[in-house]
Image 1: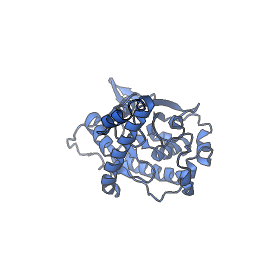
Image 2 (image 1 turned 60 degrees about the horizontal axis):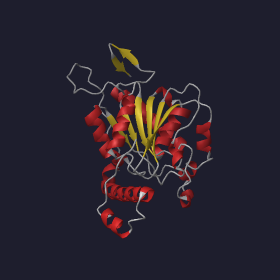
Image 3 (image 1 turned 30 degrees about the vertical axis):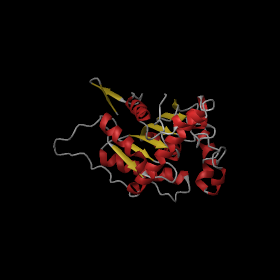
Image 4 (image 1 turned 90 degrees about the horizontal axis):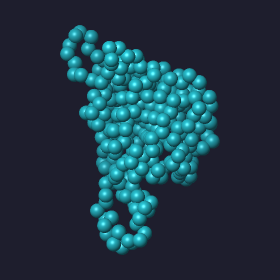
Length: 282
């Protein structure tokens, strides 16, 4: 998948100053960096709006009351990354709701979270509540960065594959990332390092895991070192990797082309889906 970011206003001037240097990869990096800066600025403005936990959707009406049509698939749960909150998914949530008709729930986990395993257990409790309130047996999850790793641990190591139909990860360090070595003081950052206990647990055999995994990774993601660590490679998992070019880490949950790819991944027929009268039923 190739996506194109916003062209910064200063690029024409840069081309005039350095006509021979701003070509190829260097130009792509400059564009991606400018887009990341713009997204970060906008996200900082939106960040306070996502500090509180979102209200869960009301359970479906049982009295025959007419309801607005929604997608027949399971609810979609959005899970943010490290030191972030649900405000990062403002655009993706709107995109999924408008184009796919999905029921979408954005979850927050505490910024003080220090253990991926504990966060995965808490996610499992939230998933059970969402299933109870929506009347659905399963959910789809979209996890950005650390959020994808927490969701994968839940699905792969805690029996969450019974609940998670499809897990889409965006820039998630499946094999561990070596970026920002000075951040090792934080225990959850250490768990995202190559060779950590959590990463080694996820590399263990997982026969019979029912969840389908779709991993979006970008060749300009500076938070993933190396970038290919965001690819999910495991012999026991049904995993598909989607390469994104032209954008960085922060743009993955924001860019409309990535959102279109996420919708396509969620709409794909799963081997565990039931088919009735030509309709796919989760």
